[in-house]
Image (tube, rainbow, N blue to C red):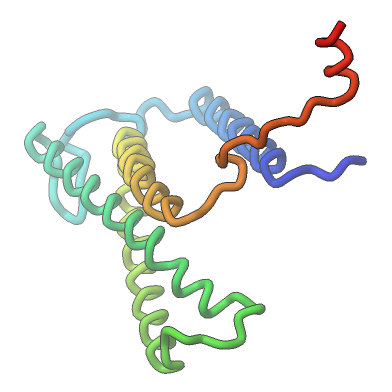
Length: 179
């Protein structure tokens, strides 16, 4: 059996994720309770967010703007801040920490993890209200991930993107072109 490259494993994982998503969506749509408030779109009298009734398009637009700001901030904070904490704390190969004292890292990590837990509770509440809000929330997060990934990748060097080396002609190609 051949060993898969990281790129091949990633592509397999993406296809697997897509298949799992399809396997979850199809039965959910087919078996869904059509009277459920979850499958409604836009404002309605039953849509209440943190005890605020979202029954007009103005309130609904404010909810979407709030959701967008919340998700963008969450993505930027998690993508740019959390790796610093997790790599310094959980990397078993990094035995020497240079950028933080033990107390700083302990306090900053506990604050960040606590704020993430509270943020997660709000995210869950937004996601289970209605399908449209959940979809918009996911779209906002993924749009925010584009610049954060760009920021993180711009400092890296990619070997595959360097100028290709000039190939030296083999004896067979030299013989072919001289004939």
